Length: 473
Image (cartoon, rainbow, N blue to C red; front, side):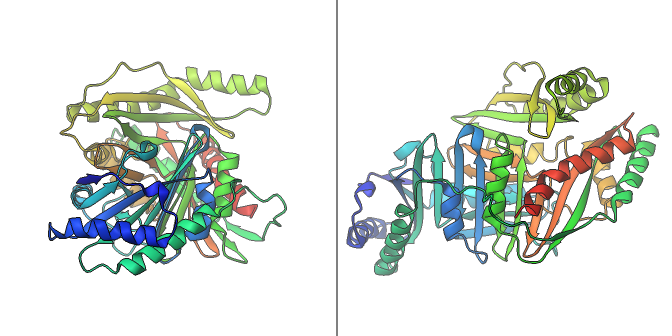
């Protein structure tokens, strides 16, 4: 990867960009290879969701990820290059694509705004066979544009294909036009619209009894010692009178669930997978990695005293603590198998969201140069928090019992760069949006002692997050 300094923040017109690209083209022509030229430009403080609303297209891949409580958001749209993969080697194939992009990239002002380098955006389905699905088993793309917002600073990144055949006039004009559009966006945030009239949405709960039947099956398998735990999911289908509005839903989600990761993944064919996930599967920065062990849950109370009682019961429940320890030990074992030195594990704590609370333990480790974040991702997915124990029998039970296709539900979504930095969440509390139709997903972990009625109530509570959001459009 060639790194060049540049006065990119001083681009004042289209001609400045064209002259700069011409100089880069002359230097790269000596190598005889095509490159991805990555320009980084500081913009006035603005909301990436507003830019995403204005620029993403349904016929191009797109990605959005935001954690309001951490004041971090990133939007990506368009595609310079992309790939898909299926089968057991999908993580390795995506890793090869990421490395190829990095090796053929020239970063301009790579440290501007503490940018994390060339970012590739990835999504993985729960199972590794992606045939006949709206989303492949694995996909990755290098965006044409991305906007990052962190701690009051907004950074635009434009990725351009550059070779000695490139049409510099067209590239410059397109880049300048988008840059001007971004600069003209208002500084205010795109917020939920309280004046928006809710549209009529019909909800199909007809298969809810199937979930309880599956819980009984799971308890039988656990009693017979075939399984220790299995995570069963359920989906409900919505039908609206008009297409759901993507960015309105995202604005609602970040307002309602500021401690979660609001996200959207567009497949380039008009379908979007969105949600507000409380769970980060892994994050790495400066060769330090953190993975969340998140398992065991309870509702929030309507009064402070009721809320405290529910929290104390969750923290002291043998069943919930056992379910949590299973996930925690799995993550620790998988990281150790990769040779990652683990940091001391803190005590179990509560992650309290607006409508639900979870047992949570962050697992921290050092990430050696020899281990790629996608190596870790392949080792961790699926965790017992979304599949079960033992993993393979639990996954087979999920295939046999569930009538829905999980697609991206409960699977990793995020980004990775060539410096070992990454951020991947788990696609839970989520919905698949397809025009005026939506499928909402939620799951619950079944262990010895699980009560089918309580597990159904937990599923309904989790489904409510997206149901309320889409009903209020």
